[in-house]
Amino acid sequence: MKYYAVAELSISDPSWARDYVAKVTPMVERFGGRYLARTNRIERLEGQRENPHVFMMIEWPSKEAALAFYASEEYRPFLASRRAGSEGEFVLVAGEDMNRAARMSEG
Image 1 (cartoon, rainbow, N blue to C red):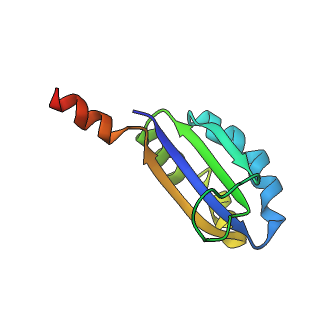
Image 2: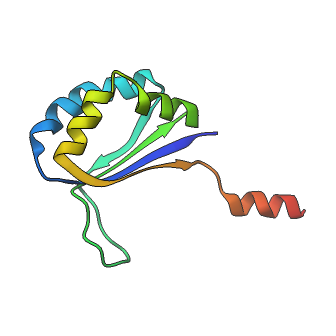
């Protein structure tokens, strides 16, 4: 099953970003990930909270691939620089529709 890493980041110190993008992008690809979105073009349709500076989504072939990347020694210094220069949410989402699965089991 595919998994999706989703991040909403507000940047407090942009000094880390250029090196992060240049070096982490090929790293993500080596671990099997594919960027679906990495943008600051965000339009709120509902809700009141402030938009993040950056929204990012990576498709992973599996939960294991995503976690292997996130826990890798290679990524560790970039994770530290991202955390030091930004704040936000970073979640891993299963690529499933639990309502569809429930409907299929009823039939």
